[in-house]
Length: 405
Image (cartoon, rainbow, N blue to C red; front, side):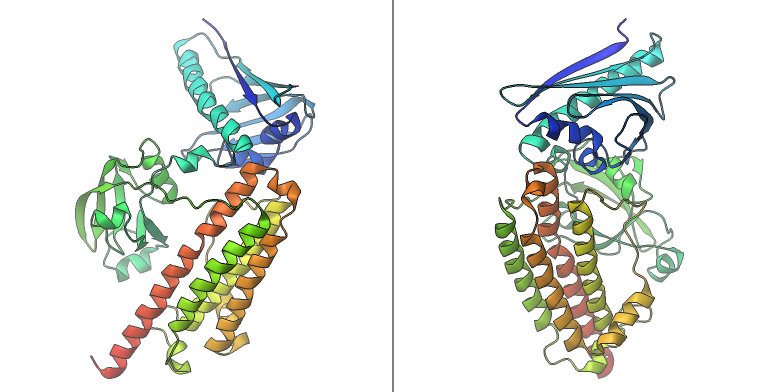
């Protein structure tokens, strides 16, 4: 039986762009894996992993820029190492790509592995072509959307919410009109299983959904306080904004969108005294001013992240970041009032849109990289919507408390 698999693809981009797709950490994440660390040179390391638990590690044994690479590697489930060879040839249309992976054993385990790897490469190489030629990542485009905002959870918070467990996915909010809301999921429900698979954290939720498509209904178990409920949750199609063709158009659209969100946010503070803006609705919750500080930090962090991406230095972490209360308090104390915090947030929003206008043409030519950043940034105002609702709910709670109701 064959110990080797082979693939060919024709791409309408130059060899240098295809070569980058295999040798640049950020570019690899855009079509192949979830995290990559790559040292692009002969003898350099290669480490790729996926959120469903698989990973491969190896090194470049041959490295000819723009022409070919060879990687000796071994996956976490592979009994023996394999060799991946990638050859690029310039054509009139762009690039002829040939990829071979060899070293599979002839026993049953080796042939099963070969079949799984063959399937993975078929899908991934189709995605590579789409990302490099058009921009959108098919893993994102074809991925169904549950329609929930994820909240952090620990034992203290679980006890406060009346939940019997501190593991799972805590629903912090719902996207209007999406499948979760329409199927009856509520804020502060704790999702613990989907499609028969245990949900312990956000990555495990992705694993449970990875074999489903938009329109599917998935059996879901969740705790509503201490009651275990079963719902059939319909998965939604993911909304995709039209990506602006130029940074100037991108900047103009983002500026307009941010201004609309800021006006809504500012309206929430009409008639609100400073004492109320600085008061926590409940013990352990943020005041409205602290929420504003968090929004300022989020905007600053987004600028820093975009700057790193533009230089192929995307930040990689083992989580999604936490909010340091000392940082929040420092910002509130520095600006001193809700008006000053609103003004600073407004300036930060304008700064982001102006920064976007300066994205260099060399980055725009990397269609997958540009598409991913534009898509993520244009989706980000949903985060503001969630916090506007939080601020308004907090003010209502404080008013009721003040009136004695």
